[in-house]
Image (cartoon, rainbow, N blue to C red; front, side):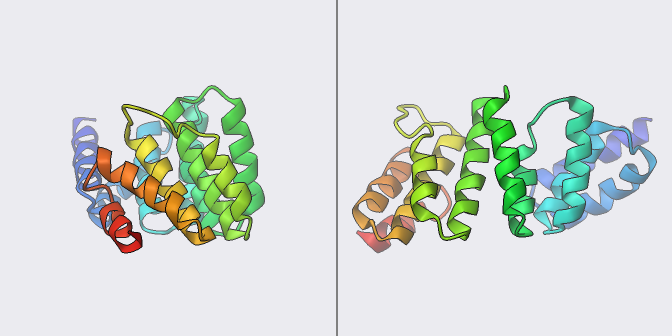
Length: 190
């Protein structure tokens, strides 16, 4: 039991360091031996997601959610479906998430994935409106707020609304100068 716990911690550490292949190599044997352990299935699913193994990630993360009774992985599961072109599933998961009792950060992530799915389908106006309904005017932003602003800025840029894109990228940079490539994108459109 202690060996399994130590191996899971080692896999989690590798995942946290963005060494997803190493994390997967460490967690896969645990996933075979401890298929009912939610924490193992969760980490296994997240590793699969990071490595682009969408179908397998959906299975593992869905099982982890069934064990926990929560919706904390709905955005990641939805993103897997988006990658597979299953936009109806993205919409279904968003509907569950927005009517459920998930934390604000999880709902915001689901909103971002759903907006991206809408944009993939050429529905930029709907995607922008969906993100604009999220927490845009926040004074002390958390990571999910920055992610929403960044996604919204990218959609505005894609739609040709450069002034709004510039304002939003600037807002991201003002709160987190090193967030993704926001500074470079801000400079490129300024």
